[in-house]
Length: 219
Image (cartoon, rainbow, N blue to C red; front, side, top):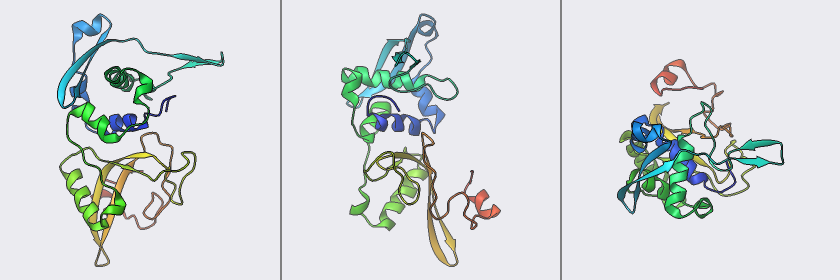
């Protein structure tokens, strides 16, 4: 993560990228513009579609005369730069990069998709109601994330989850086990910085091959 606190926006972009068609809708191909050094980013402002045509220059910064890196959103592991251009468009709409520091996930999703958003505070609802809404949202292919409680970002909780951190929800399941319903949520860490160690973690012996296949389990 870069110099500004826009992790909420980065998490929204990565959650969006779970569906490639949604990501491609933002970067509609414009071969003539692309060949001339421009990028078109199709997003939303106050619910209305807008397109930003920007140069394809990437900002870099030298650090202590030792190396050069991207100060804000990074290149992805495969060398893709779409995250940088999405952030660049968001900064342009808001006036500058440092004006997007500190925000909410819903704000970022509305910018990227134009879709309305809803936020649930876990302490205000029963677990049953939250999980019912979660299963429905996942089933309907909504973009869903979960944010952990605030705290020191460098520390994990007792189950290995980062504090004040955005996870992408990529699955929600209710299965019967020993005659009782078992509720499981499948999360993706967009930065691969945490490792869940609580019940039903990757090394839990209760994972049978049949259950793994049923829930599309992967290490």
